[in-house]
Image (cartoon, rainbow, N blue to C red; front, side):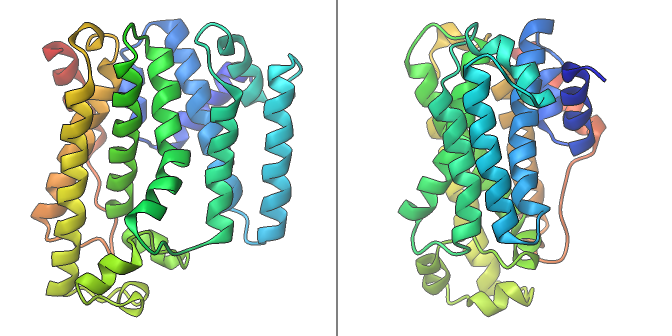
Length: 277
């Protein structure tokens, strides 16, 4: 299996909604974004699939060294081997890839966030910089496009947090800020014991409204000149906002199930956005 094939397999295997937006890209950009996504999956799996935190730290330290080796022209992992040819072409900065690893390491250091400001720091590392790197691969002419991409990354991560409340609780993590739990009189024990209630629904409506507002703010930043190049991000926004609507329609029943869209619906939303843009 070649490095590109490895990344393709990793992306398809993940079942991610992002895959559907990649399908509409020219071959070189598609290979680059697939390699970037595979990198994100590898470092994320390092934390999520390793029960011993000390072992996870060792693995993340290895990835830090591997990223540095890639920028020196000597990658050894299939993902970095696939990504390395695109680093100079799309001006992908090492500090951004290292920031993603920093974000994954935060999951080893804390499982709660006191307020939204603290959560934003985490979101910037695991999603905001991914947005910036992705926008660089898709292509842009205006600096405002990077601000759009960073904000869109935040919106995606806020959507993930809403969708994955139950899954995260099973790992002992709660990403909803503590002061917002208190504001709606929902306890950590309610989340960890999967207790759905009207108070929980009110809390999640608040999270949903902020996520939707963040999408609006992101889209307002995207210059008209770069809309066609940035279509993959717009496709993802259409898919994720539809997912948010489904979750809200189901009264935020996210504690005991993972709500998702069918592959066919995702493809339809991606194609419809592609045609309209």
